[in-house]
Amino acid sequence: MAISINGQDYPLPEDPRTSLLDFIRRDARLPGTKKGCDHGQCGACTVLVGGVRINSCLSLAVTHDGDEVTTIEGLGTLAAPSAMQSAFVAHDGFQCGYCTPGQICSATAMLQELAAGWPSDATADLEAAPNLTDDEIRERMSGNLCRCGAYANILAAIRDVAGESA
Amino acid sequence: MRPFDYQRAERLTHAAQLTADADTLALAGGTNLIDLMKLQVETPQTLVDIGRLSLGEIADEGAGKARGLRIGALATNTATAAHPRVRADYPVLARGILAGATQQLRNKATTGGNLCQRTRCYYFTNIDQPCNKREPGSGCGAIKGIARIHAVLGTSPHCIATYPGDMAVAMAALDATVEIASENSSRSVPVRGFHRLPGDTPERDNVLEPGEIITAVTLPAPVGGIHLYRKVRERSSYAFALCSVAAVIALEDNRFTRADLAFGGLAHKPWHDPRIADLLIGNEPSLALFDKAADLLLEDAQGYGENDFKIPLARRTLAAVLCEATGVEP
Image (tube, rainbow over all chains, first blue to last red; front, side, top):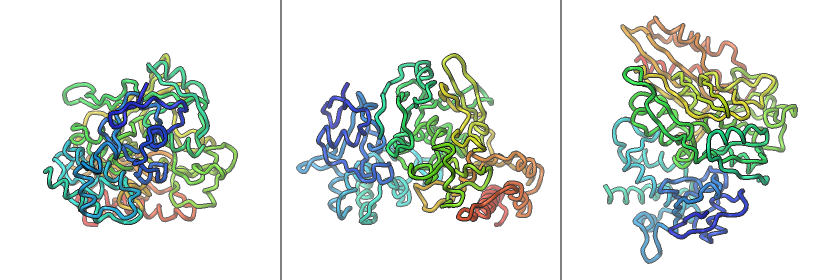
């Protein structure tokens, strides 16, 4: 009965009301994941579960028994940041930084989704592999709000990483 | 969030047994339910986690030309929208799902949960306000209040809430079937008849009885045609429909041979009016004909002040979809 976060096991919480977000921040003491709205509207709490991005605020920790969770701390470190983390720094993809861990987790998973060929509302041809247009990136990132409005630079950062991996 | 007892269902029959209790709710993706529990709109004494039951498969139903598609109740919205057969044979469903929510939410939200999601009426989600759906007999704050997102079709003096989803609207156009199991039996209900109108029991969103669990939605064999899902909303992504139209249209010799239409954002359920297909089929598409279709659709429409705009909006959205499907100049 444990949840693996960034490769380390943590015992399930006693109170079933504990959200995965509160579990990550309070029980696992990993404060990188942020609580914005706590209602699935802002995306600041985005983490990867089994490699898939979800809003950790809308998930009960007890339901994640045996799951593998990756948070911003698991993507890279100061000494060895991930490509997406480096690109956000290089392109100034933030101002206050509060939404940034969610943005980076979301963008990291989004590029995997694109590689897997998942369509989006911006995909013109449902049966073809989606093209990485700016509209595709904007649509696929619409679950992550940035009150500072760093969207243009976030887009540039994601484009940069996608270009490298393409 | 109020305290509750958490139980994980090991088998479908176990889940059905547990949810027969009025104070017990089933938890699947949880993207709506957990939010409503935080708001204390939902206060179950027991939460039955059905998320690990084997109900996630998407598989062919039948064979050959009559080959439909069975979408398991726990298939995520992402899995359904990305499924090759949904994209090829039922694009209106892929489009409908992709028009809703965000990728994070669609990765978690399930077929059955999406059907059971509750209205986003501001009075329903605010426990300080009267709401007959949340607390029967307490009154409706929306009827003379803030009603921008509310229904214009099939309303009652007790409730003008809308069913908020997109997926079910596309499924209604496709005439899909909801498969439901209880401890000792099972039944099927057309998606078009799954949600109900508020009447004098607005607390009931749909026909699901206590102890019943949705196990799948089955799509009939593909019918081809032009599939469109047009959604009008306040921003271009991540917003609920003010009005949406799901359409499966076919023409031969410039006459309608199929016109399966369903509407979102207008009523307490995905709205399907069989008279519209009866009017269109056999006739040549024209703006005058589309206007007559809208007359039928909106014959009994009633606005509540702030949402009066939805009546002309529905007329224009229907015309826009039919123009796009038929090539008639708008």
